[in-house]
Image (tube, rainbow over all chains, first blue to last red; front, side, top):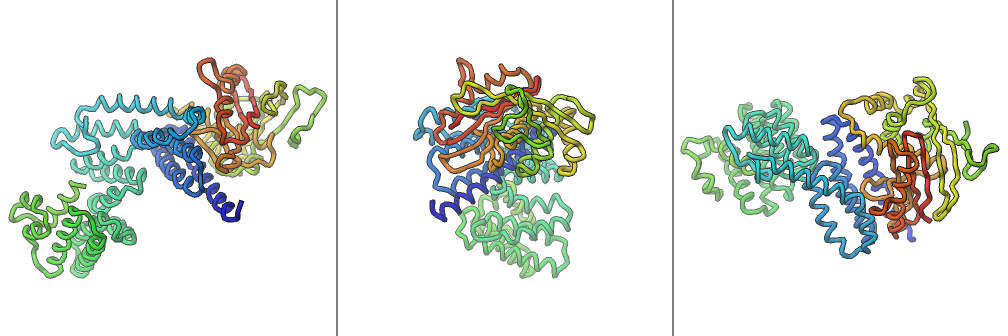
Length: 334
Length: 215
């Protein structure tokens, strides 16, 4: 074995060790059984699944090793109470299985299959009991009195399956729409911790911070995300810009102007990355908004049409606060 | 007390050699992170035995099948002991966590059994495979503990625990039933494993089976 192969094996071993320690720590928290500990276990197991996926790419692994790694990832998500994530991993296992010797594949799957089947059956049963959220698939289809019933259903799902980021995301949307900003922030934070690579959660948190946290804490939170802004994350740039505009309200002139300028810089960064049409139009609208503010002008609904957002503009009354209206429209569509 | 060197015979009775192990030693024999999360469950799972509240001694009957295909087992008596104050020096939270796992209302017993088996397997590895250190861990595929993660040449130990059932329960884990293969058959079917042993534990009665499956 060459020295290069030794090095990559050392790195692989270290990566596998790190993943293993996450799993054992998670098992200890699952044994505890308290809701907070179980959630922390889910976070650790999601992290372990990602770590195992990264680890196997460090070496020139044969099919059996890659298959075993995928089984391990899937099991982490089963123990991590995430039927959706586990289902995606399970589908990939079926695709990989075709190249495996049947006895070896059966042996590797012997621990996973009964646990996976039991979880999926239980999850299907829980989902079948939903009334208001039936078929919602983490979207927000209801309003008014239906919201409180939906909140109860979503809470039941996050209690039984705290590893599913989508249910926490739905709880965030429901709590936010009902004005429970503390609950909304907690739910969104949980979704982010389970899926830290999900840019939608991260981006939404910037705007949510302005509503949920004190002005000082919100400003600190927004400031920390500045280093993450680049052309590859236009969603983040957009939400950062909206957050700066929120924080600019009521601030004294020098602070306000600085926030609008940072918002404009963020928007221009987002536009430089060739975002999709909708994102580009949203970014353009925000750019027109902050330009108007910086020029000391009152923005009108017309800028929404200029930015290609006629489908949003048609719902705006002539005396609407355009910044607030646009912010709400973008947040609701997230 | 000193550990028995691997393979040596102690005492006059060849069928019941005594091995002793102080749990505090495990924090040196294995990486701290493997130990700190499994020992609380071990303390909670093993039934009360002789000793004061602050010092404990537990005797397990440990049968070892030294090589695959061996028909004769070697029997040991494993005296596992610990002192609370010594353990607390290595992990200040240990006794609090163990108490919680013993008495907490939300505690998930199947996970406690699993973790205790991990902890006892770490003891078995340290005692019967001196110098071997766990490098990685699986939860979804065997073996649970790995000494060598080299693809297609894995080396490690598979662990399992049962709260009751004695030798019959442990043999069923290893040998399976007519309808379902046991862990031995499943491990033998894995060409990517070069070396593996089974470390099986029963809490009541206190028994253990260490079986070399490969090579």
